[in-house]
Length: 504
Image: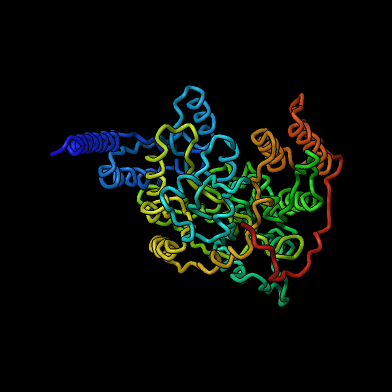
């Protein structure tokens, strides 16, 4: 063997040795135990009926994918939704932020708008298939730079839940289950809009003597059944239910309360304090409405997103509560067109994570394998098309009354755009949300009976402008009372049409 051949063989052996050592190092690195923390609480997920499902998902991950990839998933559940934001903020400040947060909706995400990882590189690296989702859901989470703040998990269109027994007792037809359908009342075919809804709700509002809210004998101080509520809805959602509208001009950095929202607020005030068919805060805090207002059987109709199916069981055995209910379509908005508000939940990876690849493995599991378990626990209609039939089947096993699932699928045709979403981002988001909440508390609280709607809306607009410009209100808003109760004719609404702008 010549000198050159011996050198070549020696170099080859060295390269092979280096390659083997490198492979061994990579394998050892890949097998390094990794812990991924999953934080629950910014959205749904903290109720007793949901904890078992979440812990089951964690156990199954750790026994399967986690054991194979040497990843341990640990779940951290906040005390409740009201304290979760402060808890997560504290953990971040202490350098102990979780890796994954969710399920989290638009509002919860906006509270930490600059803390989420852009998933585009991980989606590309893992060849994650986004075509499994409705493209509108994917677009909803797309960033301005073309990246992705999240991958869709669940959508919750607003629906009209109705108590079938209440309608049967009043001998009234059930609400429509098709957009554009009419409602027959007193022999007349009426458009299904908020004017008609109010008339039906009055007939379904009953005092302890059995008088409805249209009767001269009706006693508003002793109501045992209300016609309507917006179950657990924040003020922006209620206004968007009645008429979606933009209130913040990003170019001018100003807030203007839309005229449609002024009309909508007056409609709500009339229902609360003039005609008494919408339940007040005091009423809903009473023992009559346990475990929650609609679930108690003392509310005839509730406008609430689909996630409310999570809370119509007893919470212990998971069996359905006695109230017999079903889905109807939400009324046409003030413009006479169908518009459907929706909540949209997902799981997000925090940009501070030190284990992005492992976090994405967990994220993929939550968005794939865990969907059958979590979607039912959260009342979450899966964004992944292939999982939707399974959700319907599971829900039907709990609620055997024959649910109108077509209402859900039809509602997706009329979802509001991201720009008109009831939790669309504005500067100083948490402060703005708190100010809307204080307006909500005033309107639905006992002081709402004497409030001047227009004056309070003017205060709200002024305060919101101060917030988005960085100049916060210097004092707590004080209710402005009227000398006479404000009245307003029912808003004139066009007959509903099937034309609507498809949102994302």
